[in-house]
Image 1 (tube, helix red, strand yellow):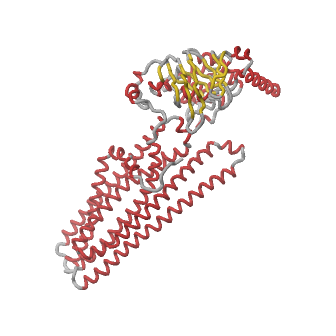
Image 2: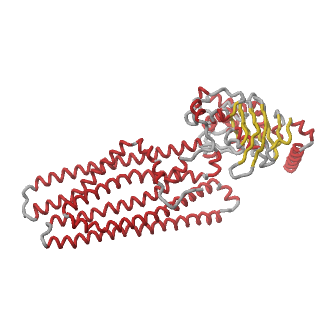
Image 3: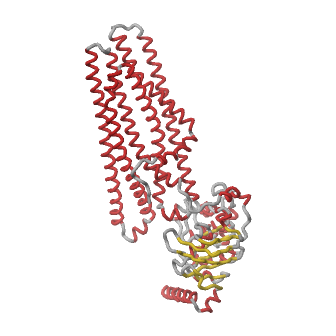
Length: 604
């Protein structure tokens, strides 16, 4: 699921932040300036100590001490103000960056085709838009704070040390080369380990999501123990990967501390020798000791930053693999220019749909799979109702998914109103589409909210009219709060039949020109089916409609019934015509009729 190279740091990933940084460039620039100022001021403090020792302590006088205290206090106040500013700026940058990346990620999810969701688990996507983005924004904002401060402070310290005593500065800084070698080695190890941690974290999030959504299946199949074992295996992998990362980091940071301590020890030894021979003053030695300790503090901070950056890169790779995903279905540039895109449509230029549909020599194969359709041809006139029947896997759903442009033909073309639908925007089709699935999905909120979800401009009167047409108005009004009754997430407070009726109403208020019923009555009770069946003819009147039917009794009145087998039309005609042929459809219908009668006898 994650095609990420673990072998190297990808600079290209960080180029993705350019647009984000550009949108906040003034705040980034101000933060950078503030941290440079903070770094230089921090490097000045040992010089205050040197001045105080050489001019007040060594000379045993307090002459000029009041001015010294005043200057020191003003510098301290200025530094306190800088701290307030950088905390404020870094916090704003972190929040804005999280918002921007999350918005871009959600926008991309809106325009990606169904084929993308076929390959990605919900938990995988959730971890990208939550924990991964949080890590990125936090590292970038506060990393800039520590990086600008650390580099500036080290540069200022190096300059000050060489101005105080060139040879002693060289001795103190002699530990920097081995420190650089150790840093290079450990950062590569940390990066690889962090990538593994983020990958397993995504798997855990996906597992959580699937187990929660499949709670009923788990209970009915008594899978609790097996699920626990599988999840425990994932968390054990997470534990091992996290421990590996922790061990590597725990080795690296002490190495930095040890080398820094060696630098300080060298300063004490050789500085003490120089002090005893009066080659340097006592104040200069104190300043050098302070500088040697201060110099390695930002190095330790930078080491931690590098570790966090490694973890952030692993997160960034995952987030931007989503943000930069190229959809399988894209409108042409000239189409976007004329009609707008999915998020910025120019509806005023859209043509009025009449509803004629033509499949012309259409072939289709899913990625890395065999062909589902081959050289498929079909012409549907405006307002015609087409029923598709056949065995599972025969290609029925593929036909309507291609019509809806959830997928595109690998060969041939699909025309709507005699125009190749690739010459029109994707959302032109979707805007004119009413689609009712076998398993409807409802959102948290009221019944009214869920029906209006299909058309935000629809009035309460139009919602009631649609429900009356579907014969479900009285059913809804008998509920505790009528149309304001809450349905819970996924519609869990309603029966399957009630959810299906609401999904029908939701599709109906869109006033679509194309209507697709994908086995919409196969999972509901007989009474609900009768409610819907009596309204279907009215609903589909004047609309080009495709009905994928499991229960063949629901398609008796279709204008045409197409029997699909292996992606081809093997029989075509009205219900009675096909029965008279006594072919494939006749066998399907009589077998199903006999089965339903048997069930009816057993119930009685």
